[in-house]
Image (tube, rainbow, N blue to C red; front, side, top):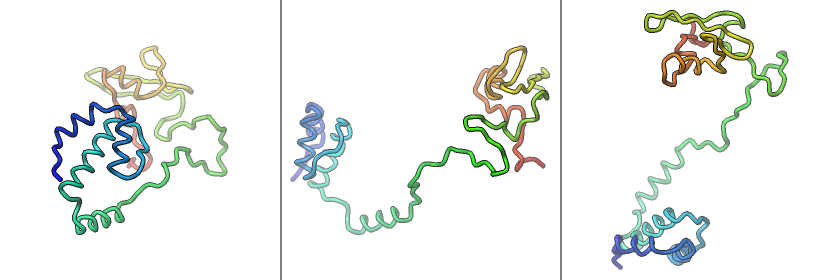
Length: 163
């Protein structure tokens, strides 16, 4: 059985999603679980080619199975909650200050393009040139005109990076 791929693609593109789902069932022998037209077209054409020209060799199938077994798959999404030690008081919804920041009231200084910049750390934000920003990255963006990591811009190293 020879399949003219270009002709099949034109025919499939003219079909509605309902018709594609029926064609998918004919080709695969099971109902389609999606209504995504482009995906259905690609899968149907792939299956028709595989039936006409032959599928993967048994050796290729075994190798693919070996590779799939070696893959580290994440089964659960990463935890987004921060771990808080039991002796540290924490109120849900209240964000703890970052370890890399100096205490509230201090000023960060940096020479940038011949200009000495001063940013004052506030309890809820950062003040630069009389404007209060929500984050250091927002301050860095106001200064440079492009998105920049504020901690890197002001050269604030984490505890593990500091000498």
